[in-house]
Length: 144
Image 1 (cartoon, rainbow, N blue to C red):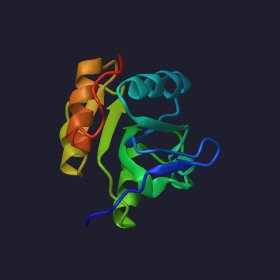
Image 2: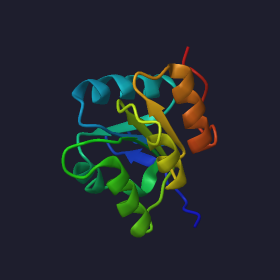
Image 3: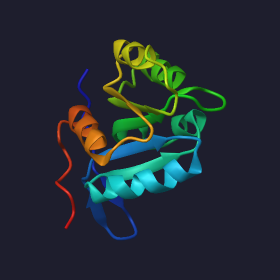
Image 4: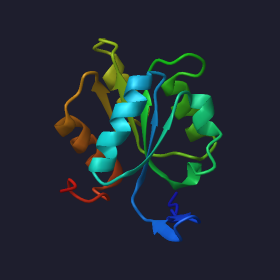
């Protein structure tokens, strides 16, 4: 299924944001604050959410180019959210992030359709590689 993603229009400025939208879903506030800053430096538009349930209520869901998703969260887990999106026909490239050290986790998530699974703490280079795989290198290079 191919979806056309429309650029976001900012009524306040009258400008259209054509940068790829990456959504970060993580219950850890420090991740929700730091990761979006890095993603913006890499040329992405970013929305951060504290839970899977909050993400599902996002009006821009159809614009999301890539989902960076914590594995373990209160309420709906990351893998449960990925299944929910898939079952409802709203599949999107997903990069899981986790602090869980489990050798079986990454292969299981990749088998379920994830683009990548990064173990915290991960490097900027690992994230960039995963994002390029997920978005097809849609964003610009590092900002100057």
